[in-house]
Image (cartoon, rainbow, N blue to C red; front, side, top):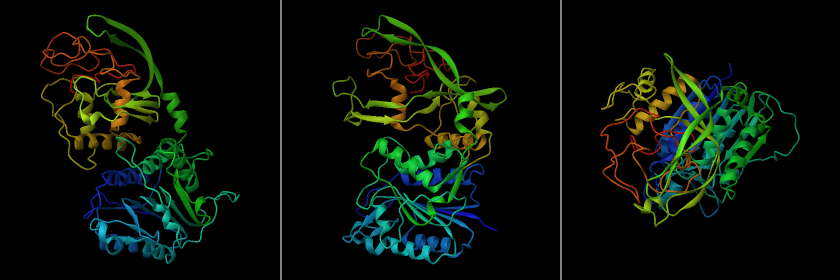
Length: 459
């Protein structure tokens, strides 16, 4: 019986002279999530290998291709550093690969090509999210994707998707947890946006074309490539969510909210009514998690050097383009946290009631970044939606809400607009109240996007 089998390798740590690559392990986790989802990738076997040494990586690759049957669909995914020698020959770096001896300590692309060519499987997909990954084409029989051949479900062949050309580096988006190419591969599957012909199926060519277009909108000089043998571009890789855009459109509702602007002296507050779109995720027991639609756009990330409390970590200022996404309307409450903490464990245990200040509608506190990741993973598993933490760029874009001032309500801050230690002042503002505790979510005016407590309360 035909099976869908995947090997996902991520390398974030290396030997001397090669910088770490933090996004690699996150790339593997994201790919694993979509491939294992029965409604999307529906892969029967997904093995992940994190920070392997050279021998372990070669053995895993050999086993993947050696044990496959003729009808199996194989997927090999690598996220990490790619290195080329003077002959433009590609090597994939491992945990013990050092810059000065990479040809002896990395996995040679020829090794992977040989294993692939000797494999019985007639359907093979190789995805390389690495610098210079386009150099993998050397020695392969390739075929232009421009040939007009009618799509076939389950077409045979081999296909290699690469995040960059043979002489290019790959990128991670500013503040993002995933590398750029993998981010849009995952997005194309999870949202169904890669199903360009709306037939409910996502073929390799569709997925690559979607990811390439999204990548080049952010990094025009980065050119993901596709390398083909036979009709590999027609391989059916995943299924699109059932009518995702229509489902989302039906879920979206409009709400009105009050935002505010304050003058430089903090003496005058102008309150403004605005509206935004959102959907409500039912967590059970009548508890909802409201997610606000943040339209995509371009903004100036960072702070000018003449801004009060400026730090070097906020410079240089630069333009960043952010695709649309959804963000929680409020800080996660303790009631919401308890419900999600009671869901089946994904990776780590969660304390159901970690907060110092107790209250169902108070924000949850005393949680780590790993706890927050687990919260998102459990929520994703329950809902079959992809919940994650925002990237640094997404968070700043959403927090600013189109403003360029130090705070989204103006040049200064007031305890009428946020919960913070009012004994301290900023700019021309006056001292205010110090509440010495968290406040219920939604107590203060929202920012221009309709998000609450983006300044103050917990942070």
